[in-house]
Image 1 (tube, one colour):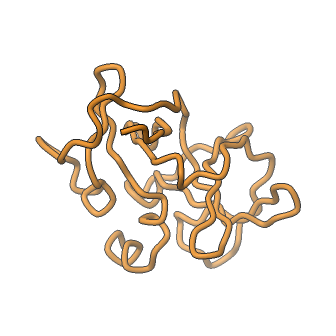
Image 2 (cartoon, helix red, strand yellow):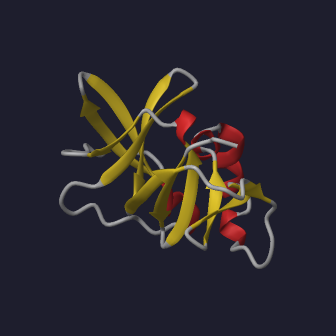
Length: 145
């Protein structure tokens, strides 16, 4: 398997994302809040003449907003024809893994259950494999509410 994975941290949890889902990883300069939106919708931001809906994954998972001081880091993705920026705490690597995707095992925080698909190991550390679309699709958002 030569699939590339992006390794990041969200709400204190190490995650992996298949690189084919990712357009870019950027530092966001400004996020404009949108009144009346759920807490996990951080607002809107502009990137290369496009408007991104900024999703705070930490707020979606644990109902605690990710601190947005400075310039937050976001994974940019096109999901169902719309542009999103998914806010992450950090990004550590993008690489292939020798063991491939492993089944979920052990204790998993219940908040991550609707989003975790498998485990991917990198440098001896397990990462939850997630799909970025899973944070956006209505059925996933309803389950998290």
